[in-house]
Length: 456
Image (cartoon, rainbow, N blue to C red):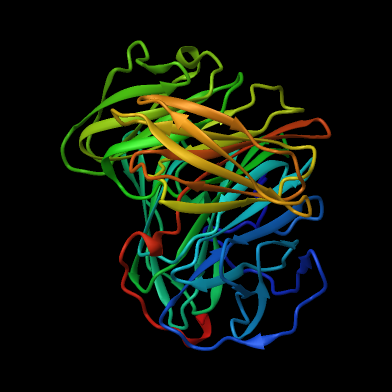
């Protein structure tokens, strides 16, 4: 029996549907035409189509006005200021801002049943030529789909490379993505394996934003849907900040894409400082392979971060779940995070009943401080608090409950990392989601830009 959500095919490439969303709060703003500018940056927010899910594309800016539009209609934009939420959009959403602006955007999805069951969040991202996804489940009871979005007017060509426990795994290459469009690529073509793999997405032409959506099955029903975060880029000094507390599995996935053996040391960052995990102080990852390591016994249900140091470039991620039975289980995936910018802001739209916690980790040798400012829609002035994170430790800060809110972090530290851990009861499902706090790459890394006047 084929339980895959898209129609059965060796490789599925489907253009996402086009439709309108609803801007919340306030009435629809007048439509205007975006003017060409070389001083703006654009990101794209993915969406899903599900009759049982609540999908929210949340944007926030601290200073200047944002422009939003449908992917397929870049010339028709709406203005957004402060915190804004677009509900149940029928296609990916473009978000354009002045390059000097401090802004953030994320997609949040909640469903108690159906194909999107569970709680999940993913950061909106800018087009790049290289993406890594560590911790892709290709077991017989899982499904993964890659959503590739081309914001430029010219065609992009995408190649996939997969790394499994026994080496590289055959994957699709030469996939064409027309300009101003999105395609969904089923990963059913990758050989089934009980152990997770890492997927690399590169372009031989153009740039794309890439998102990986993962589904877990029990018998003929989806019991959890989640986004696998983009693992940034391969490196020798990696930090993960979003290991959620609680029972359930915690599996570290490490990939060595190089040609020589990688020796990786692992340090755990907790509220009480650093520690090692028995048997995992130093692990070996053969060339061109992915290895997995169980963490749950050593973590003891505590919130944690991980600091990995390797003698060669590696990629890493953590797969986890809430430890419940099939009726209430939900999974999460945490990825590698870069250092927080001097000033960054991220939106949440997870419902009033959700509990959100900011996890800050400091893998450095000196203490670090940050000012954390939270704001909730329609609830008065923002509230700020100064937070100190000792060297080699983690600090957890509970955020105010609200249907929609934002968290702004200002810090002089060049070492601090952060993630949002969100939980919410969805009928019988104990939803859990992790959003890694990564500043938009176009403001921190130079990329070759093909100018598209529609992007503004």
